[in-house]
Each structure stands twice: as C-alpha cells, then as structure tokens.
Amino acid sequence: MKQPAGPDGLAVIDKPAGWTSHDVVAKLRGVLGTRKVGHAGTLDPDATGVLLVGVGRATRLMRFMTALPKTYVGEIVLGSETNTLDASGEVTATHDMSGVTLEAARAAAVNLTGAIEQVPPMVSAVKVGGRRLHELAREGIEIERDARPVTVHRFDLFDGPEAGVLRVEVECSSGTYIRTLAADLGHLLGGGAHLRNLRRTAIGSFTLDEATTIEAASPLPMVEALRDLSQVTVDDDVAALVRNGRVLDLDALGVSGDPPWPLVATDGSLLAVYEPVADGRAKPTVVIPS
Image 1 (cartoon, helix red, strand yellow):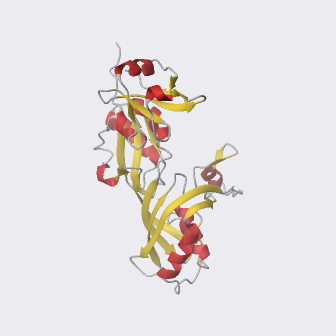
Image 2 (tube, one colour; image 1 turned 90 degrees about the vertical axis):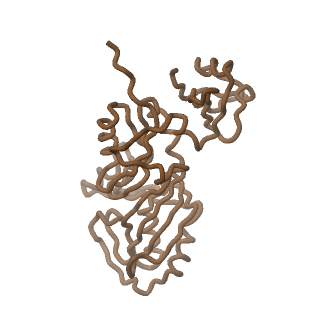
Image 3 (cartoon, one colour; image 1 turned 60 degrees about the vertical axis):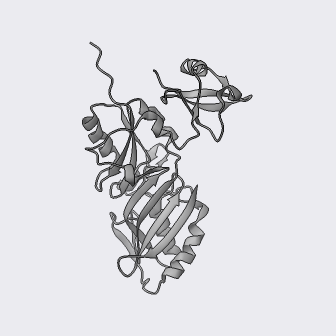
C-alpha cells in the first residue's frame, strides 16, 4: 500500500543556541513526519536566528536560497582573541584596547565594508582537499586558506552593553563569516577581538517575524520559498510544456529580471525553476511533479 506523501514547503525556524543546523533538521523530521528535510545557510551552534529548512519536494529548492543576502546582529568583544573567533573557543591572545573609541572602530569598519576578500576561519564547514576545516581543526591541524570574495553591504557599530564590547549589525552576501569580520576589526584596531551572541535576523525577505520554534514549524507553500526571485506566471498552454520539461524561448516564457526564474501556474502553484541556455532559450533545472 502506497504511503501518503508528506508535507512540502519551507519552514522558517528560529534556531536556538546550542543546536547545530543538522540537529534542527533531525528534530524536524520527527515533528513533521518526513525524512525529506534539508536546510540552506548553516548557522554555528552558538548562533541563533533564521534558518531556512526545505521540507518534502522543497528540499530541491534549497540551492536557490543559499545565495540570498543575510542580516545579523551580535557583539564584538575587544581585547581577546579565541581559536574559534567566537566565545565558544579558547582565548589565544589578549590586548589592552581600553583606549579604542566607537568612532575609531567605525572608521576601521569602513575597510571591511563593500567587496572584500575574507579568509574563512579554521573552525568552519568550508572544504579544503575534500575535508572540512573544522575536522582538521579538531585534530590540531591548521592549514593555509585562500581568501574568498564576499560583499559586506552594511557594517554598523554601536556602543555595547559594557566597556570593551561593541554591538554590531551586518548585512552581507552569502559566505561571509561575521566571526572573521570581528577578528579582522580587532586587528585593524591594533589588537584582537572575538564575536559573541550572534543572531541572524534575516535571510533575504525571510525575517524573525515569521520564524517559529522547531516544535511549531508549519511549512510555507513551495512557491513562497522562491519569493525573492523573479517569479513568472504562465498560462495553461505554457504550463503543460513546462510540466514536460521542455526547453523554451525566453519570449514564450515572458521572463524578466535575473535568473533563475520560478514559473508559477495560474492557480499559484510552483511548476518549475528555469535557467537560461544559449540562443535566448531557457531550460528547467527543477520541475515539480503535479
């Protein structure tokens, strides 16, 4: 007897501290009653905030969400460096930075704003030579890491809750490490620093306002998962071709804006995601079975 299909959609979760992103996925499998669960945009265990989780057929859409910009708040502790660049690690160096002013910190932050090159931390999920850096770090191995281009759209600093602590708000591209921004800021100020109390407040248009606890997860419709992309509603004739995975002219699809393009039926359901190929045509990279 065929088992009934499980839920499909996007769960917007407010990840609690102490949970890995994989822990959230594992728990949601039980809460939602399906094995088909996957996340986009990993959060460190100590960090909290918005985590996007695909459920059912929406797991195939997660790759389109990875590149969405991220927004964070947190606190930068001046004067102490750690081996993880955040408060979870061991202190590796201390500095007297009592003379650093908010104005000096803001001036230094300008150098870490815009298109920059960033070296990922050793304690991270980045893969080098087929192994994740945090696996090597646990073995006491530190290797050279290539700097990677990222974009910091906004790096705002404010007085923190105590002396020597700055409150930070960052809007940035995917792949940016806020821990590294904190450490680099400390170095620019002539000492060192680490990050604490990191909280992701938004991924694209998905904010804490619509995030739920793991236990209260209620997936949004699949079409909502791609609401930040240039969606196009197609008529029934084109929809029939899309369902069959046809390569189509861009004019026939009526697409505009940057790809990829989610194609939506007249009833509002998601049909497929198309991307451009040569000669003014587009092909499906994902087709959602009806």
